[in-house]
Image (tube, chains in turn yellow, cyan):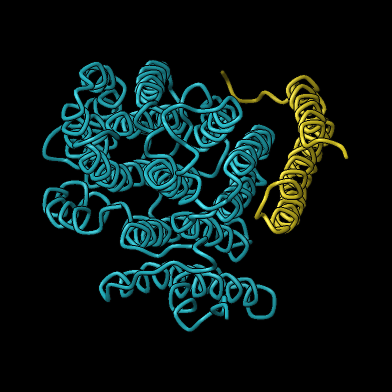
Length: 102
Length: 477
């Protein structure tokens, strides 16, 4: 049987890759994909905890479904805003979007 | 046999939220099927916010208490007080937003977003289950991205919205990872069972979970070092959205943080008061020092809100031993004081304009408005007997009682540090030559009503203070 730690390490690695991408990539849509990676790594961690923990009784899987729904809502609003920016500026590169002064 | 999950009491406990949700649906449906009348939509939304605050008041007066959904959702005096506050803030924000949103032609959509944020904030203060907390926090956050990006006529708006969004979703994921680690370490999502595993001495996984959770919360509260999104988001946002978002969700998040720390990890909170002290001091200094250089009023108020988050967080440095009760009171008093003065200041900016120049000579063209703004600015500095003074006084009581003299010193130094930029606005209103005839008066009745109501609350805060502190003592946490 695969130990719990293996799942947790994979989850942590995926989360780290997603965070790195979200901080480094300049295209807003790619940043969004990285955030999806982060959320899914959290889901993996959550589901493996739920499966291994005594007394969790599968509640973790229910929580994972909540998280998937929230992530979908986030993406719906997020892509709408990215689209609004694209219509106004013809770019979604976060470096070129700097109207307001620092 | 197990007790049924939903009883009549559950429905009573959820009345404020059910009403808010019903009004969101009604506002949206009238927009779709009825006339697209801006006044009708904003009127319904104002009614919805009042229904939220009113039903929570009735529940509080009736002494209703209990926990529901397997102890995941708790209704107590503390939660009800914050539901009332969120409802009232939403009410005044709806009034202030009415004129602007009528011009966009999408009043119903905008108003339902305000109510959705209020609904999320109102659920948030009741959360005792880690995932209830996460979902309601997101319900308060996701509509706020849309609110910031709502103004299609200004490119800054969608730009501010996108910056807020991209940083916000990363922060939410980090917060969620923290919650899942806490869940994994304790084996339960319920705060009462979390408390058993969170002692002063944490395992590495628990510490990582706590740090990630606190980072996500710090982002929502725009506490340094997670404040960088605040100026761009508030400057880009419609001014009334910045007003609402700088108050309602933050109040609720502070309430959530209090509940998590006191119910979920009391020993850990005591061991880590130095961390809150450090974050509070950094936020105060960074907020005030950056605000000094701003010429755009919205940007200045954004940095000022970073500083004020720092003042409230300073009370968290006193969450130990005998000072705990005073610290909880300080958070409540400061949250109310900050709500009235900050909403007022943003509302005046909504009416007059965001460039510093537009305030020149306002006293000659519109004296009542200029005096109100002067009151808000003086209150934000902390001049007695205005609201901000009492907030700071309570924070200082609490931190002094806990013996955190460094924090007391930082609060006082920062109050002095913030004088120049707040008083710069007062100076330009009273001593500069007016550039034009001042802001237009058409259709600004509701907005002006909100401004003057906030000014009255700010000036007469001393009279609200007594009952508020008594209430805070009675409900405890």
